[in-house]
Picture (tube, rainbow, N blue to C red):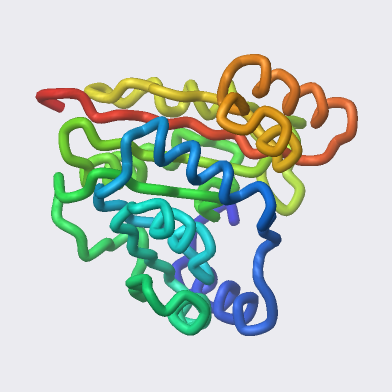
Length: 226
């Protein structure tokens, strides 16, 4: 959605999660989350999965020793998460008005968030500053967006990885720690090396040849004094 409307978004996702869910990859997603947890030192840390939907990724973080909780605007998603993954903590809430103190989180996970379905990424700078403000010194924000790299608007805005990197480069006091493209196949083949340049290049080449989307991921870390 080009302009975020809270009630429109809530209705959209309530109806969506009442009927179905987004596609997950049970053979590859656990590799991805385990790799991120190990690479970023998240075991034992406090993480908020913003826009958690039915809790799939929240649960994968939790299984890897992260104190993860999920938050979503849609109560239907949160109810499914609570039923499906009883060991987790899930809250209904608006990402634009989070009940979380500044500087209280070790990590934020933001995957496929709808306000980023916009032509102009700079319109999201205020929202992103709010999320980055939740991090402790040394904390990380993991941003992930599905894209076919085309630059076209379909059901989403298909930015390139470089465009997402440029978006995060404007935030002072934060270092871009990781930037990579991956898909389920490259996680299976390269495993933890899917984040390295050869794995990222393979995922990018596959998408350019096939048109099938990949996941562009940018990880930023909060620096001392930020």
